[in-house]
Length: 203
Image (tube, rainbow, N blue to C red; front, top):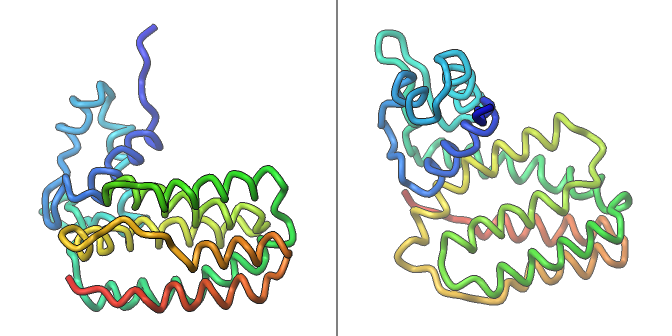
C-alpha cells in the first residue's frame, strides 16, 4: 500500500518552507497543487492549510483563498511580547519536571547550535533547543501556543540574520542549561527573558 502523508506531515513540510523563505509572504497556497504534490485528496490538503492558518503562518481571505502570511513589523512586535509572556512561564513550569534524558538531549541541541555552520541548520537546532527545554511543562495548551509562536517568529529571525549570521557560542543557552541542571527555574527564566529581549529584528 502506498504511503499517504497525514495533514500534520503536510503542514509540517509547508511550515518548513515558509520559515525558510522558500514560500514567500503573500504567495498563494493552492489546495489542488498541494494535493497533487503530496498525492492526497483535497480533504487532507485543506486540513493542512487550516493548520497553517491556525499557526499564524497563513491567512485565509474570501475570494482569494489561502496565502502565506505577510511579514509585518507590528506582527513581529506582537510575537516578541507574547513570547516574553509565555516562554518564561513554560520554562519555569518545565524545569522541575525535566528528566535526565531530556536534559542530556537539550545539551546536545545546545552544542548543535554552537557547531552549526549555516543559518538554516542553526535556526532548526535553536528552535528544537527551545522546544526541548519546555518538554517538562505539564500544560499542553501553553506548549502548543509557544510552538506556534516560535514557528511564526522564525521567519523574522531568518530574514533578519540571513546576510549577517555568523557561527557563535550562545552564552544565554549555556546559562539556561546551567540553571536547569541546578533545577533553578527562576534563574533559567530570567536568562530566557534577557535572551528574548535581545531580538530586536527589522523586516
